[in-house]
Length: 292
Image 1 (cartoon, rainbow, N blue to C red):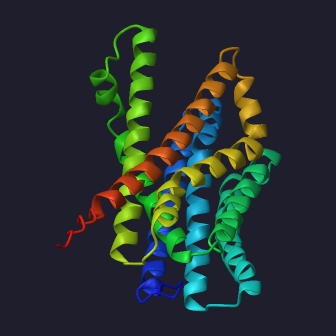
Image 2 (tube, one colour):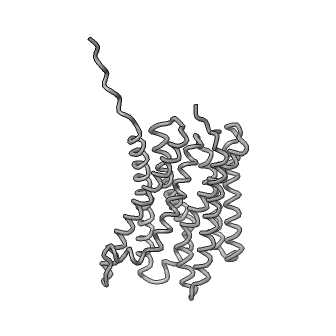
């Protein structure tokens, strides 16, 4: 019978924690490099607003991985389970928030961003307390692989935009951007679902429909929670960006809706792909032989 303390649970949790922390460190470094490389203060503000959802998602993922690692290292009773995982996630969020305030100062907008990152890490740790922990673990692994795939895909934005019909007119570029966003969402969901299925199926946990459904949808759930924290914690910096020009509020609304659409597509595609893979492994029952 499968339990949270599966044989490779501790090793898998530590691997996930190391990979998630490395991903968080890379996102923080990339954001800092982009902000410091901006030629104008206005450009730096826009870059910071664009990097906020990515940093929040990476912090929530690392917070969840920290909670799972803490639980795998020291299993506790149900009453203390949430306290341990939430505390571990909050620790990751506090470190990330401290780095942000250390690097960018203590202005009110920066403090608000740091608090958002702290909340993301804490929420990720709380999610790690959900049972069964094995499903959460493989779901977070799928979310991590999907994030890496999306980041890798973004490196080819310009040639892909041309491939999808981006031309000289603004309408052509907008249509190409919509096609590229849909393609990235489908790829992200498929990668998340395939990863979650492969890890869960390899563990031979014995669970069926609900476990694979939840593991495949975990990446999308993480993105939806990221969007919620982003919209609350980024009110001030998004307000600053929205006042830069009359067209900026429309652009911010478009980007926010694109993030929400991406999260919803990843959620449903990830769940469907995981279930389809599970169905492909099921054998059809052999017809009963009628005796004479």
